[in-house]
Length: 482
Length: 137
Image 1 (cartoon, each protein chain N blue to C red):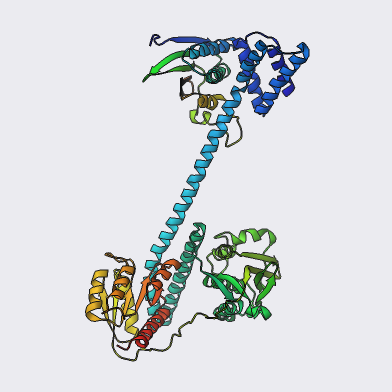
Image 2: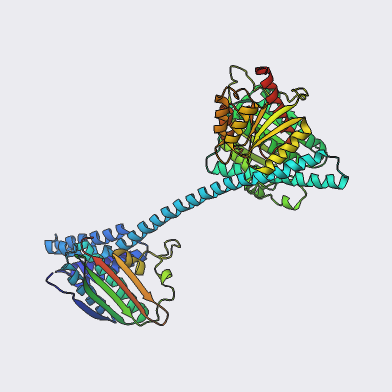
């Protein structure tokens, strides 16, 4: 095809003289045909140069008039390429624009998810809180069963919200991780003890074989690694057979890496389904079974492992079981072995005297819930303030034993209330427990750094909430006998 | 300005008519101080518009006019036919770069060579394309 164009162009050039509009149109048509055949600017340039060369060979040279003719013809031949190039440039700009818009939309989606998740936690606080209170009552059996269902559905929803929130944070690159050397034995023991009741309930044998690796350390966010281990272990137990087993192994791997493996004797996963395993909401058909799950756990676990600089892998044999392993960088054990001190949630530490508690909270349903929880706990005079300024006034006047503090107050942010409480000598000794639906690690750390004694997230877990109040009272007593 | 608006209509039926439209357009535009590469772009755009008239309507006309606006001068090319018309103008203005089906020639190609471009068409109503290029832009 190109040789036809070359021949036609060579004849056009050889005709000599100043090119007429017919010649120019012919050159343009050659260029257009070249472009339509998939040729490029280089092809057009070669067609022109070959024609010049052929003339030189024939005549032993080329005169200025022919050079000028060739210039005009070449220019017309390149016209269609100019059009096409402008098209590529324009469509490239459109693609860049479209990508920027898609990224913006993704950011907006994450922002929306994160905000919505936060808003959803607030009503869940009432559902789970009052549900837990009802559970403690002496209810007739069918009512107790209903309450159990309400709670289990509520907790499922809470888990879903938390996982959606985490995934959107990871996608937005906003997940705060606190990386530290974590001892394999510690984290494994902790995960195993949480999972034992579930394994016993399902009739699955749960064991850990850590061997020498027990003392090894990996670089990870302790809480997130714990979360991933729980996810893998609970999957291995839930998707197992009766009388099956789940084993947690730790093996050193190449290049200073450590593998934490969870091996199960479940049904296994077919090769062609393995890829979908980590896709959010894809439960590989498990949604048709009785096994509860959000469909987000593995997607989140994989994202978390990668965010920690590691990886999550799987191997599976249908009919024999699956093997999931977390790969993390191995690090030296830290020098000073100051393991985090977990204060024991002892029995009522404060004696039986009457307590005064100030709760600064603008949501009446949250207030009512805490009121009901405290009534069951011990004799409490509960003071209420729906605004930060009013709360400060009450704190100064009544000097309560404990302050419970919400963060999103109508007149000022809870952290400002905390600052003022601490800077006033009349109130600086009062322990403050933050009670907030904002469950982001960064916010929790910020308030703790400011001197909050504890940070309890809504929805409240009644037992943990009370344990936290006990600890706050205990520490206040030992610090300054009032 | 010594020259008032000048307009020439060229009937388009055959290849020779395309040549004459290009030639007239090039001559008029050269008087406005367009660069050689801009003259090629104008001739190329006229070719694409006139070629569409021949291919899709069989016959029509190309109207060439000099334009003056706010101290600048340009050439207005109008290609008119009474052919079958374009059912979906928006689609016809798409290159198909996204589908890989076209090369950026034709109507969208002509649009890119000119400064202003407009297509008015409907099935059975024929097609009118107007395109302007301003000198010194």
